[in-house]
Length: 76
Image (cartoon, rainbow, N blue to C red; front, side, top):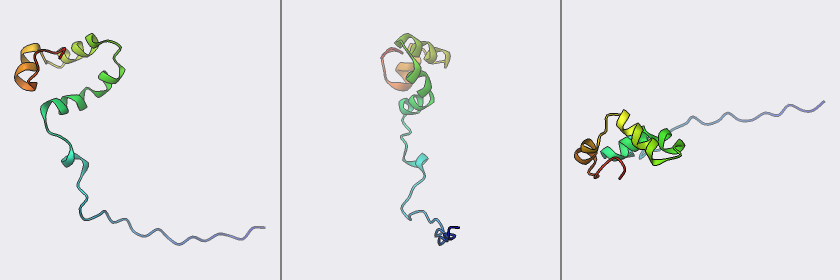
């Protein structure tokens, strides 16, 4: 029969003093927030029209795209 292996316990986890939560390091720019919110749509889309449709379903029209995100339209 094999001898039983004994391992010392793991030391307690202590985050680094300078560690910041991931949220505080992420950009708060409106287009970056939109990008994160629609990530799965953008990753799975096979056409730019799908992304434009998702934007419009989210209430983002061409005028909203200009005013909020500083782009000419939902295709930009």
